[in-house]
Length: 201
Image (tube, rainbow, N blue to C red; front, side):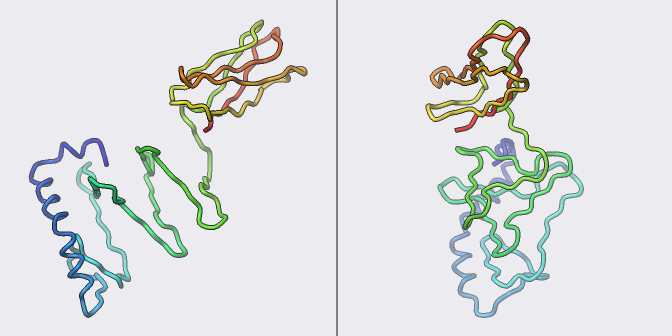
């Protein structure tokens, strides 16, 4: 749910609340229909069930910066569901901003059906706060980093040195209580040592 949802006008909130209150009754009536409907050209009603919709139902805002569609639940139900038996479940596109903005605990859960990929990305991937390049200064053997995210005893790092360590060992230690970790090399170098890191759980 967007952070500005609470700023909507009382009238719109009242209409939404009244509509949601009638979902149960409307859904029961919809299931009892004798003849299936296609939704083409007819009024779409909140709480309705259209089992044979065969064309696209679009909602387009070309005039303001207001949200186009907002769904919410105050209980444990799923606010939005998308299902496709053989195609894409949800196709989300933004030309100038994030296609999906997720906030939650966790924000995004991905679970493949069968043995396919849980997440597939085309193009570069950016991990803010959980990745970076650490620089161990010349003459030093370690550097401590606070990534700015919660850590626990299962947190670990993937480390990639960006120069030849000359046979030196490279490892990390974590300090979850203080939400920080330390990268170590077994002996100091005469020049700075740059190490790429990725923090995972």
